[in-house]
Image (cartoon, rainbow, N blue to C red):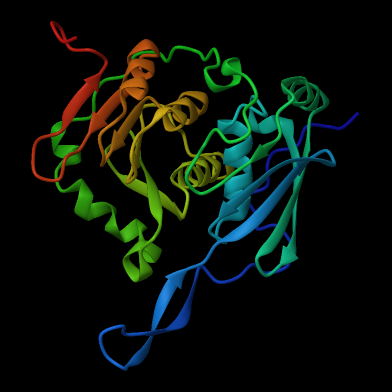
Length: 279
């Protein structure tokens, strides 16, 4: 029987992953010239729980401990951080491994799901074997007030400080957390939009930052799997820089999640909770 241990906030001991970006040569098609440019890197991260392989995800090689914690929670593999006992990262270059020790009850539930995911940077539901897994029963959130409109003023520009990789070489998504006082606290980046959100959730958990009354901001399109991740994390407001899908909106309303789209050139659009007389 393992004693429950908190997820460590210290960096895990592991072989170094590649840098988040590296310089590459390219040639100009119109002219006989060559130059170098920075490109975002990605690695294959194999995740095993209690020795059983569960997923291979393509991720940016940064904040991998945050990603493993967030992925475990936001995918429903564990119900709370207390069910994660240990994380060991290993590997080199573009092949990385994460060995995760979880509680027996969580591992039994995981085996019952009969799920083996082969993740990519674009899809958050790869390998799901049943409709019930894609559309699980999730708890309805307690109501939370909408953030004041002034908190969203200039938000697109303000989150830039949490996107160093994106501003340097592009090709990545970001997820940023705003607390219940309107302060931007931290952000995470990744080639995968759902990976960025997993990293953010893991970072919040590992640093014991309260999520109640806070807001997650995502730079990517807002589809169902992002809604499910913030619901499992207990974040009550999600701001997306891109429009939500219809199914994402339905789930946000059904589960009492504040869902706000922040267009580039117009006022924020509140999609949920549903306003009076709105369909």
